[in-house]
Image (cartoon, rainbow, N blue to C red; front, top):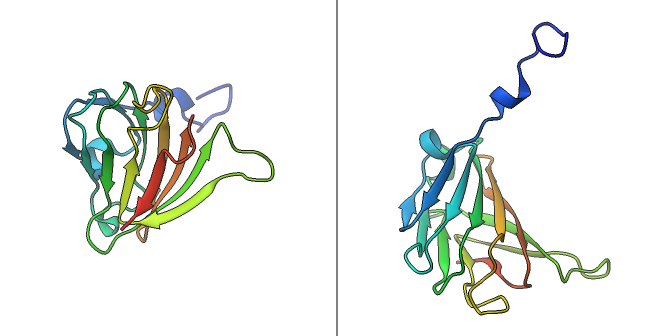
Length: 150
């Protein structure tokens, strides 16, 4: 019982997340990474993050957060014949010009953006898979930081 209502689960317990720290390129999977927060925490060793095929990842969702300044791009691979649909928001967006849409097999985080050309600590993406596509909403300090392409 939660909050005096029977049959309602404790929302804190049901929304608990695993936090993973990447210091090298990695392959994510549904079993270990669904519902997780994934921190990119190495300046140059996390250059590739492979995702499972969309057909094997229905409902998979996670957050990926840049936890350090980067000296190399980080590329997320949706695998052959799968696409990532990305809608990027950044702090320079205005009411007249909000968000940028891109789509492709790869989602690249451009490590050369940011004030010190090392990306921005705190830039992130929210990812969900519907079995046909990976849908991404990206948030960054600098325009053009995240882009999907083949």
